[in-house]
Picture 1 (cartoon, rainbow, N blue to C red):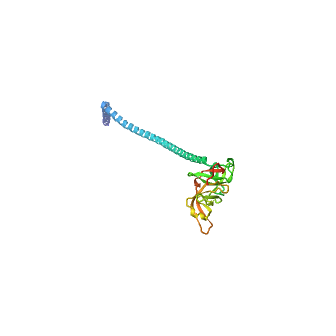
Picture 2: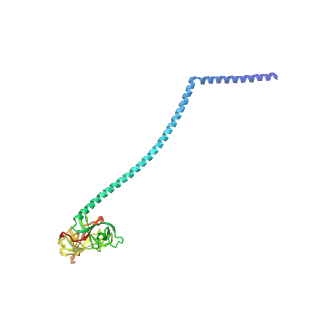
Picture 3: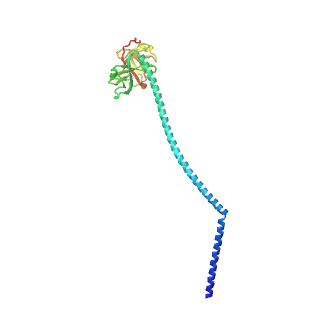
Length: 292
């Protein structure tokens, strides 16, 4: 029994020594291997290569994020500049339109001023500023009243398209504004004359500026002497309208054999849809002889 136990102890010690020996050899071998210069350089190169790849990836990612942020900021800046430019263009266009409107207004005012200087009647220039709020008439409001010398029954004329024409007459005069009834109103009656044939008649309104005026009570003998396009002017009778102011031109002749008089349709000289400036005639007395 002792002999067997002693053998087992010796065998166990020998196996342990063998494991220790093998372990020492492996450690020595690994130490020699890693202590050599080539292995160290290779390990260093491998580490640098791996780190360089990682660093390159981080750099690309960072650059991408930076470029994205810069692009977003630049896009926002470009958008702001775009809207600012749109605003400037809109302002410039508005200024251009305003300048064009001012030039046109100046041209119209110079035209009216030239007519005013040549007008042989004492007159008050006025601007149309509105329509009759009660709609009792086809009337409109001008910006001159009693303070400027405007009074009821004063005739109103205008200069348009290179010629003067009758507009109507004042029916009400306030302190600073007046109401003017135009020729086309149904309550308007003007003693008139055919400029060429000299036949008399009465021009009546038909309630609508788009309808021709009607000249009635013309002697039947004028049938052969009236032509389309003949001018109709004020006769000067009645004491309201001066003599010789243009009313309009003959558009159509209306004749019936069983009637004692005839009538004609007249297109007004004034386009009331474009009327802006008028002249109120304050006195028909002039230093010049009136036209026949």
